Amino acid sequence: MMEILYLICSSISSRELASMTLLGLFLLWSIRSINVRKNIVQVLKCLFAPKLIASILLLYVVIVIACLIIYILGYWHIMYTKEVVLFAFSSILLLMEVTNYSTQLEFGQVIVRQIKFATLISVYVNLYTLSYWWEMIIQFSMCLLVLMKDTIERQNKQDNTTKQLYGCLNKCDIMFGYFMLLFLLYQTCTNPLAYTLEMLLISVVLPFILTTIVTPYLYCFTIYGSYEMWFTRLKRSVCDEKIEYVRRRNLLIRHCGLNLRKLKYFEKHIQLFMIRDYDEFLQAVHICELGYRKV
Image 1 (cartoon, rainbow, N blue to C red):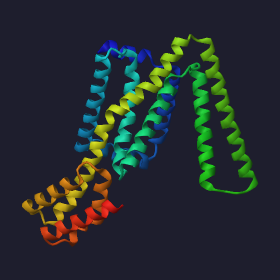
Image 2: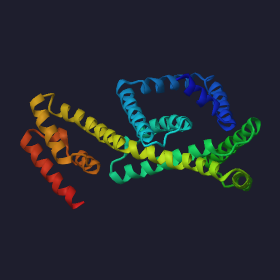
Image 3: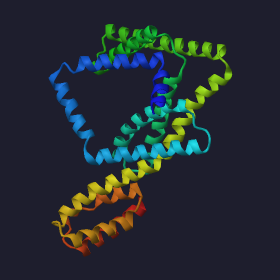
Image 4: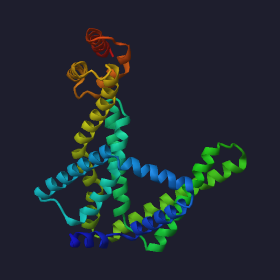
């Protein structure tokens, strides 16, 4: 265990160290505000909710299983540990986001976006780096540039001075992109091809494999979350009558199954609190079934 921690710490690049330094300074600056401290406490309370903790732990179990599969196939290397840890943290955000989607298409789109996001983080981490102080200067400048552009966009002013300033910031952004591209091409040409290929393998293939493996769990989590919210309302609509609740719940599960789009359609069109008995509920489900087939 200590050897693994040592390898992870020793593999931290100057870029990652600079990012952690800036993030730490930003957090220290932010917590000076009482409102920010209160919001942080609220966020921590939400994160440590029992159901969310259980969901995150199950997600991490799936990620560990994915790593074991890679290890059994003979492709695992200890240097992948850091990328897996970064993926695990980014997947928490994905876990919280997927419950907002109502169709398989939307779910698929967010998964594709996660692959792109995880790949971008991995490329950023594994890309050829500069010295610590150069990384600090470049990252601070880029953060300042992004904040200034965002501020101008939010103000939505149309005067010439604002337009000129925004144009200047855009040019700086483009120049930085060209600089990083030239730096990457230079390092690619001067470093062994095997090293570049290994970097690309870690940056692109590993996030794709991990996301593919955790996708079924994320989909099941989305289905479970949708059913849970709906069943809470269903229980209240039958005044906590257990037998009636079970009958209606089982009927909904039989009709919707694991179809997220159908589940959301039924949830939207069945007026639970307007239905008096099981026969009316059965009729409402039948009407919804016919309506869904026409969509």
